[in-house]
Image 1 (cartoon, rainbow, N blue to C red):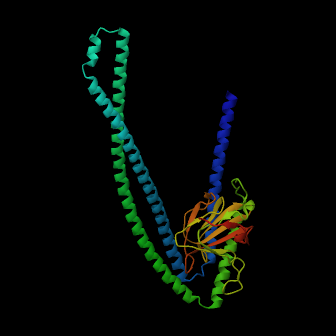
Image 2: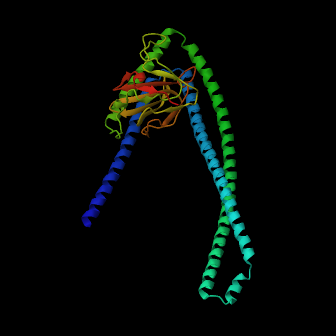
Image 3: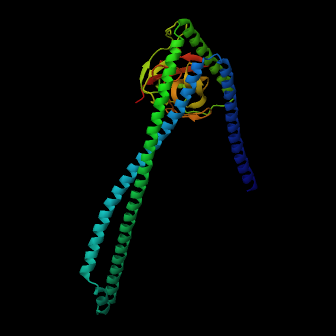
Length: 377
C-alpha cells in the first residue's frame, strides 16, 4: 500500500513538474519574442512619422475590431439561448395541455363516483378482499391525481421562470446590440482616419526607387523574424499531432473564404522582388482560420505586413497570415486546424482588404497552392 501511495505521489509530482516546465517554456518563449520585437523596432526606427501614425491607428482598429468580434459572439450566444428557451416553453406548453386534459378527466371521474362512495364501501356488507382491492384503487387514483396536479404546477412554474429568463436575455441582447452599433461607429471613424494616412503615405513613396527600397526592407525584416523565431522555438518541444504537417500537402483548406490571387514567385510591380505567398481577396472582418494544428509563434504588427500571425506547425513548417484587421490569438497559444485566429483586414498599408498568406519550411517560402486545395465554405 505504501509503495502504491509513493508511486502515485511520484506520478502526480512528475505531472506537476511537466506542467511547470511548459509554463516556464511559454514564459521564456514570450520573453524571447518580446526581445525580438524590440530588436525589430530598433531596426525599423527609420519609419516615417506617417508610418508610425498608421501603425498606431491600425492597432486601435485591431483593438476595436477584437471587441466587435467578442460582442458579436456574445450576441450569437444570447440568440441561441433565446431560441432554446422558446423551444423549452413550447415543449412545456404541449406537456401542460396533456397534463391538464388528464387531470380534467380524473376530476370528472371523481365527480361521477361521488364523494360518499368511499364511505359506502366501508359500510357495505361485501367481501373484505373486494373492499380492500377497491380501496387500493381509490388510493392509486388519488395518488395519480396528486402527481398530475404537481406536474401541472411544475410546468406552470417552469414556463414562468423561462419567460423571466427570456425577458432578461432580451434586455441583455438589446444592450449588446447598442454596444455593437457604438463600436462599429468608432471603427468606421478609425478606418476613415487610417485611409487618409495611407493615401498620404502612398503619395510620399510614389517613386519606384523608394517603393523598391521599402519592399526590400520589409522582406529583410520578415526573413529576420522567421530566422529568429525558428531559433527561439527549436528548444521548445512541439505537442504531438495526429498527422505531421508534411503529410498534409494538397489536403489543406485555404485560411479564409475569398478569391485567391496566386502570386507566389511572380515579380512584384517594381521588379527585383518576388511574391513569396498569395493574397486572398475577402471582405473586411471575414474570419481567418489556422490551416493546421500548431502554436502561435508571433502575433503583432510588422512593417509591410500589418497585423500578422505566424503559426509554428513543427518540423520547421510555419504558416503566415498578414494584413489582418485584428488578431485573436497570443504568442504561445495552441490552435486546432480551422480555428479562428484573426479577421481579414487591410493593415500594413493595403488599399483594399485581403489576407496575405505564406507557408514556409526551414525559413524558405513554399507555394501555398501545393498545400491548399480545398475552398472554405
